[in-house]
Image (cartoon, rainbow, N blue to C red):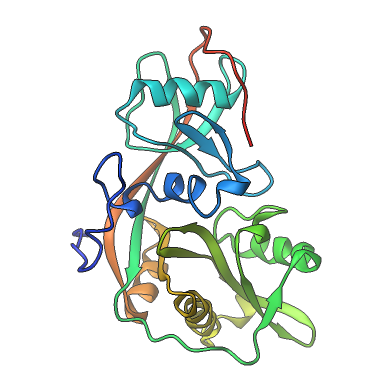
Length: 252
């Protein structure tokens, strides 16, 4: 799958590296619109464990950022995910590698879904049940705090949902797109993606999303709706070095 250079995604750049904010989306969210949720040590930050597994560092090429991540992760030898390239400094153990794609809305038609309902904390048990059955990706007890979630109900039962996850300057990620197996093929995901994207555009942001690289069915759906592949992404599950790290714990 070739990587497409998407018009309009070459800026704005971050002040420190000159890179686009989408190049390190989790860091841009945790140090931007979602900073109030962040647990942070210097150049490393993460969401609370019941909100999202996203953990990021300012610059994967900076050894100091990895040192901060080690402190953030806890005692020496702790495990932590991190959105980074496929390498880690000497002394770190890579336990798992994951690969994905990042797509941005370039020709997406957005519109409200009048029959969609707003989902909130009181709906979390149903949302968790739907996620457990459909496996769209991580969704935790307080993930709903990240943004606006919409759902479709049939006879009172939640059958499909989609919502917002990472939010960074000028951009908002669509995530948790899932439909009950018995309800697939009826356009529910399409309607919800367009409706969530409509709300994102109404406040002046551009929708984007991530998908697992092997989830070719979902990628094909998003491309058919008007998303364009921007870049490949990677994450690591790592174990921090067994030696000592700098003093200090997570800061809110």
